[in-house]
Length: 86
Image 1: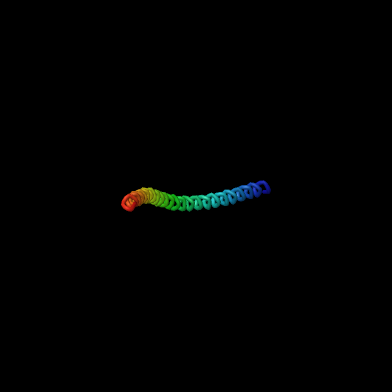
Image 2: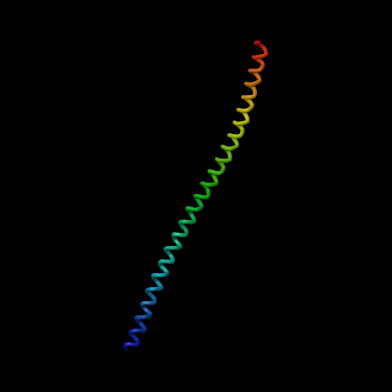
């Protein structure tokens, strides 16, 4: 009887361990799914920010070119003014 009881005890304990491990695996799977969803959102935000940065760099380049053109125009007008007023 002791051998039979020990066998059932070992089988019951093993089943409990397997159930606990299955629950832990399920919890980890749920966390993985949540992390994947968060990563997807963060990836979309990063791409959006990247687009904004590219647009701002383009605008900055355009404004810099415009500023250089305006400075050139100012220098040209200064030269014309000096020539007109000796």
